[in-house]
Amino acid sequence: MLQRSKLPPGVPFLIRRLFFNLAPATAILAASRLLEVVFQLRPPTVAIIVIALLSIPALYILRIVLHEWHVRRAAARIGAVLPPRWEGRSIGNMDILDHVMERFYKGYITDGVWDKMGELGYLYAISIMWDTSYFTTDANVTKAVLATEFLDFEKGDEFRDSMGTVLGTGVFNADGEMWKFHRNMTRPYFSRDRISHFELFDRHANLLISKMKDRFRGGHAVDFQDAIARFTLDSATEFLFGKCVNSLESDLPYAHNDPIGPKLVREPNVAERFAQAFSEAQQVIALRWQVGWIWHMQELLRDKAAEHMQVVDQFLQPILEEAIAKNRAAKSQGSISSVDHKPDENETLLDHLVRFTSDPAVLHDETLNILIAGRDTTATTLTYAVYLMCLYPDVFKRLRTEILEKLGPSQVPTFDDVRSLKYLRAVINETLRLYPAVPFNVRVANRDTTLPNPNPGGPRVFVPAKTAIAYSVFLMHRRKDYWGPDALLFDPDRWLDERLNKYFTANPFIFVPFNAGPRICLGQQFAYNEMSFFLIRLLQNFSMIELDLSAQPPDARPPPEWASAEGQKGKEKVIPKSHLTLYVQGGLWVKMTEAEKEA
Ligand code: HEM
Image (tube, rainbow, N blue to C red):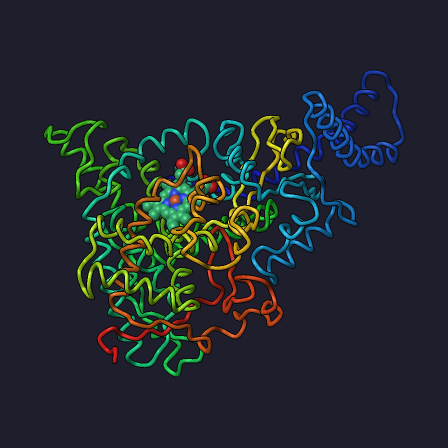
């Protein structure tokens, strides 16, 4: 049913590159042949070969010089300036690339390209091999890219290309008309809260909590990051497809130092294989994104995501076929309306989408896009919320008191309860501020354009077409000039006291964990509901939570020098890392005390 390209993605890339790079040499060979045939002139073969070879770098240099010239002229013509540039010491600034990669793998999450902000300002340029990108942590610049100048920026070909084998043409991975089509089709589903979602959160939360209790009773630590990722996967597959992959049914892993580990191995079922393959496919695309265009060279012989996507499709295909058939049958009996129907309470996202299209590729891509967009982000935020409550027991206690006062030890929360728990919302927002699930993101200019100058009153900054603008929400959320002198500290009260109006209300673009503008996260409300629901159930069930640092793998502990750093970095007990989304290196190993066992 679903057709995938058999050609490894590196091949068309290589053909395109070879065509461009060899074009001048080919032209010179053709010209020398022409001289010979038309004018009977035969230049020496060695000279032709030398000139042909030299023409390759010569054209490259010419292209760079012309581009620089165009950029300077175009900027000057409209009174714009170019941003400060990070100048390296080696050819093509390869030393900068080394520095960035080293910091990326060994340093704190903000290290690397971002540590130049102090010196160069909040918007600057880096050219690696004469390919220029801009980097920013400025709220006005980010606002322009995401909202006010939205039409000038897109995700771009490179993003689409690297994500293509997994995300296809879904909402997360599309630009222009294709994006509008997907967004308009999917948005109505998220426009209302559904009680059925709370029911499914409750089932999966109960299962996870009881599994965690079993482990804690035996004195074992639990990797909360792994556990909650199963909860969000099970919840998401159920509301998307109406079929849960039941990843919570499998054993939770044991810690590296646990006498029982490694975990028991048994043959995984189709749903478990889906969960595993889906994670692997995501890792492939995350890695592609990390290494840049080089990923094409690593996939000259095979598409590394394809084998995993085959497993994903095996699970998905019958579900899509069934939904399409059900919709056809209902249509032929006249029992369902057209696309302008009102979504009903119990329908899944797939039920909703089949009313718009019966194209299996569109349904496949769209549901998987929502799964990717919604699953890790929510799991990450819950992981860091629990981490922060381990670091700040007073916050845990106060939140638990709020929950117990409102709901007691076992009452299932409703939408109204979730909305009324102000401290809970403050804890979630403060988690999203310090550890936004998508810490870095990028857009590409689709034409020559300009951006606001981060220096107030300064001329606008010129952005040539095809320039990538990377923006770091993570750093923006930690800027003292935006959030006050205590910006680096975890303090949920900043969402409840006078600091709320002073900082956030005065300048809402300083807090954009869900993005902003026309591409703002579609699942924001769903995510707040899911995260709030889970935290309420967790704190109803456990009266104490703590990190089990002995269970943390030895290579996943912060280096001692971090301890002297200001703010959260100095307090880290785990290593925050990011691929597409933030995560905790080696997992978040915790122990909790059951509420019933309170003295
Ligand atoms: C804490 C949880 C979440 C966070 C922090 C988050 C964050 C984001 C961010 C930053 C983007 C923009 C990505 C980009 O355009 O580059 C985004 C987009 C999106 N999110 Fe979320 N998200 C969360 C949960 C969810 C959930 C639960 C769903 C759905 C169930 C969802 C669905 C989407 C979709 C469909 C988009 C693409 C929107 C578009 O491009 O038009 N998200 N989200």
